[in-house]
Length: 426
Image 1 (cartoon, one colour):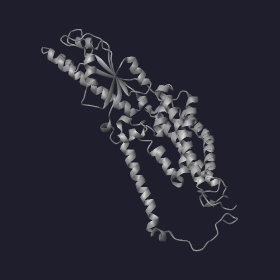
Image 2 (cartoon, rainbow, N blue to C red):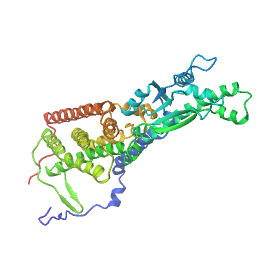
Image 3 (cartoon, rainbow, N blue to C red):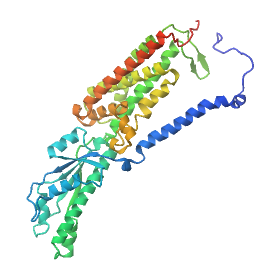
Image 4 (cartoon, one colour):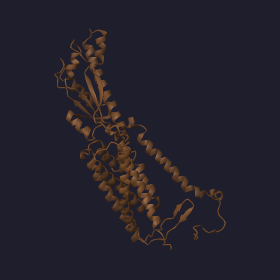
């Protein structure tokens, strides 16, 4: 480069048309972009394309509050009959029914462990029996409690399953009542054929500024992107500043003198800068989401601390991967933190409604671990048993793995004498 910042003329320039006729120039970009397009399509759409057919063992609580005496000729009351029929239904494995007390069911709603609750009310048997007499005043009601804090799709699936179970119970009871009241008029027979109504209520409400239970997912995605993009920007900035990469902005191209530094010290520098700069990026994320957009959030100091640690763990992981894999590190970290993380997070589609491959990934994929903690803080009063404790543990493990993996690889490269670049003179 000359003193005025321009590049000297080095002779005849190659034309693009001539290069386009070189098959080897096409080969690698074509293979990589095609493979990426195929993998992204399979991974993203594979996780959400058929949740109904993939649905297995969705946790739903079943509460039987009926303590009435059995009807004449029966050994157990209607609440017990319905509970036994629902739990022992071998025709469907869509739900994992948990028979709980009302208090236990509410606790599981508040700790992110069930997607909904089906409640058989107290006095249910007496209310059904009253339909066959002149004492009937209203149809007995079974209640479906939803949990939008688990995500709109998961709550909807649980509501559909619970409603279908209640309607099936109503049909079964209706056939018994109709057979026993053969002399009833047409109006009463119509009532007896479907004697139970179903009411849907919100069991674990979320705020009006919570994206119908999706704000936790999108906030988690922001933290992952902040760590991912911040880590890559810092990595590229350090390489440029130390003279190990060219700096090209528009028509301007510069190359700084190479600073003699080994790989381990470079990684230490990048990780230290990541720890400092993440403070700013996370503060702006919290300010934008909570302060400007008004996202429903309590425990703001805890949310900030958790957000910083989560984004920092991702950023350190990005630095470790880039140090280990070099030029393709950004692509590898994109798959680790985003491509595989989104469909296995369980934040939009329940893990019980995705193929087994994604359920396997969910045990260690970062986005799943981080989203559990965010949801606990935003929707479940920051309770540790709602997923926050496990999220903190996984953040600590992820940070430790990033440090150990990154410095093991760079130390190995340094011992083998693998220099990044031959130093260039000033």
